[in-house]
Length: 102
Image (tube, rainbow, N blue to C red; front, side, top):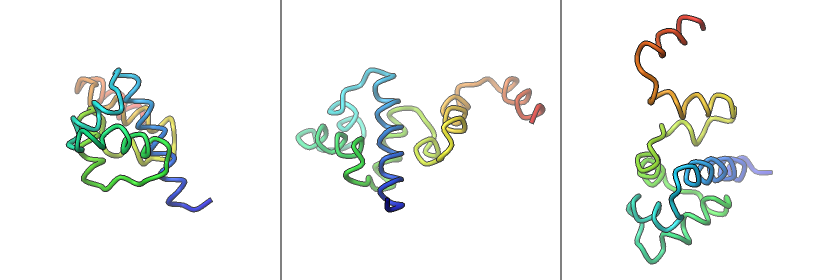
């Protein structure tokens, strides 16, 4: 399997996971991310299926809408992805405790 295809599939899986977790449709996510409303659903669907690769700017907009760090979509380690996803929501004291344990 080509590396770019693997990355597309990883991105698509993570995108769908977060989108569903917050209850957004593909169309609504696309529109909120600045994709033309008539193409929004189809484009997000293709990203989720790994058929097309989103540009860095589109991924930034999607990350902003979903309130996840950009890195969440690209790390290959699922546990690290979970940590990246929740890290911004932790209060500073919890972050310090976690870092100290590490």
